[in-house]
Image 1 (cartoon, rainbow over the protein chains, first blue to last red):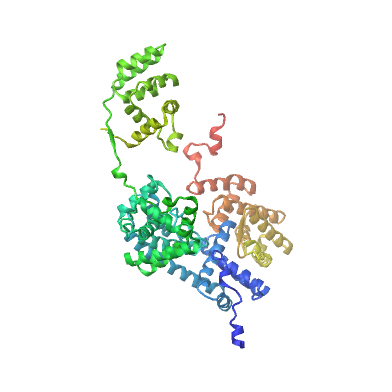
Image 2: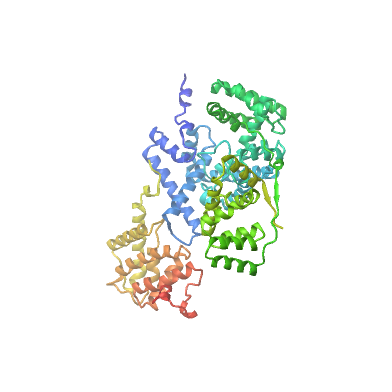
Length: 456
Length: 166
């Protein structure tokens, strides 16, 4: 080893530095390693202070000499982030430190600002190419984040005073989580993940992706889920079990094949099987190399899910079979005409004035002709629970199914908003249903789920 | 090693600011107003205290010299209360920089303070702070002109008074 080699030994290792607070961690490491003396560190701090004063003046448009501490801290964070953006371009942190000491904080900051602008441009290009070929899906978070959210970011992002801000929540989760990044660096990386995932998902017709996601959850449109994961798993499953890859269609026997294939294997063996499947998938679908690299990067996550699935015997939750909701049986129910308001009001008043329940029942029998009116009466006539139960007993199962769909199959939000009379009807129906044997309950619930009420 | 704002040494900037305050004596001497070095340092200390109290930070010489230059010709300033008034004005200034949400520039706020101090407040810093600047801050926060008055529209001057008696 000669003197030149000794000089080339890297004193600060890049991987030990924080990607989020790069500049700060670099200074910390340099100071503790003795590369920076007290005086040198103090000079860098004072240079940062001078730059902060300049930025504050710019921020205030020269109108104010003072600024709120929180805002000043934000400006300082922005300065340090921008300097970090430039310093990250060096593969050797020692060189970046040398650049800082040689050219000064201001010059490095300017370079960082230029680099940030470049990152913005490249992120915008990436966003544009994603938008041009965006997967058609009903999932609301997919388009709201990728289209509206990212547009919002570009609108709000101002690298000069808040380069470290992300501004948006980036709700849609990407398969390779983006961690330890801020500002444009985060968005650039996030868009990169979206680009690959979107590119992969668009290799399949949108309807097949829809069928697959419908199987994952019937209401996947409202779910915050990653679309790429089930699509990639299903495609790999098809390759491994001989299913139709383009249609992402496996059969129930495929799950058995996959179970046999993976059981008793350790993580390394699983990774090898998955790697082989990914290679075949790449060849079969003629996937570009950069996308293949992203897929290879996803394999450890899939292997982990498969390992858990083998242990928990839930292979069908990793490799999902498509579902075709449009083929489900639908029962069309068309409500008949209701009483006019005046007449209905009279009936309700009469019922409410009755002293005995038998009289109320007789009135309902004679005046009420439709299920809709009966439903209104159950809500408006201030009937007690036992009275409602007695009326429900006289209804045929089909009408019970209609009431069950309207008053029992409610979302958590709908349940929260119920009126007092609706709560009484809900509880009575629940009690009434529980009086049936389980099999009959299931039949009514199935009929209720298949009901399509068409209001004319 | 922390890299926070609090780490930056302010002693140097304080000494610089005191020097700039003393330079103002050349201008104010003809009005019979002068500050000693001790008084200048005390004013700078008040500025630091007011900044800290209001959660602000200032770079450069600050606004003490601007304040002195604006107020030195006021008929309500005399040698015996000069320093004390400046202390009060400084604290009031930073309080209302926050209260106005930084919607007014330093120069405009000082000018507004001077006009009100000399005219309607007749030299009372208390009136200036509690009434005139309070109204200015409220107007700015609501997007009105500096001198907008609710009394002109027949409303109560103080919105809290509107509900008196309820």
